[in-house]
Length: 145
Image (cartoon, rainbow, N blue to C red; front, side):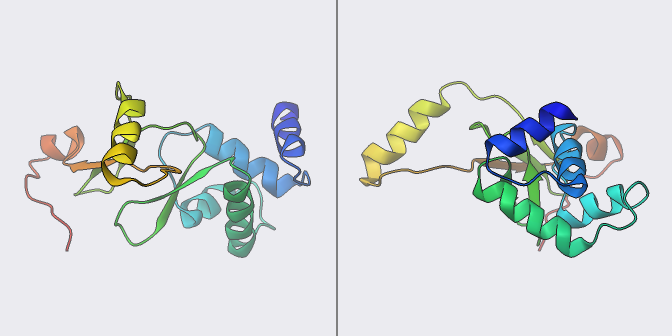
């Protein structure tokens, strides 16, 4: 918990129990939760936390580069404490989001800049498909509308 407090201080953020809990949850998961998911997960151990606090904290974390906000087309924002450049794959059935490594992503970044003339600031590379669990359950056509 002290390491998390040091991370928050280094980013110029006040250390509060709510911020510690939110960052600890995010940095300890690969599920890419939404603000609502975080709120529900923290309520049992942090009964005074509010959904508004979770949203405000996530916004603060995003603005200082502690988390990235993902918009994957599921109607909500999801959050990832792994802020390095990496792609995600999203299940079109259950909305699971997973990280994976992709070689040469820096080359893709450069190619986008060269082909468009844009000064590329950041990227969000998303793939969509049906996860192994949904495949095993016999789901083969779950395209969201």
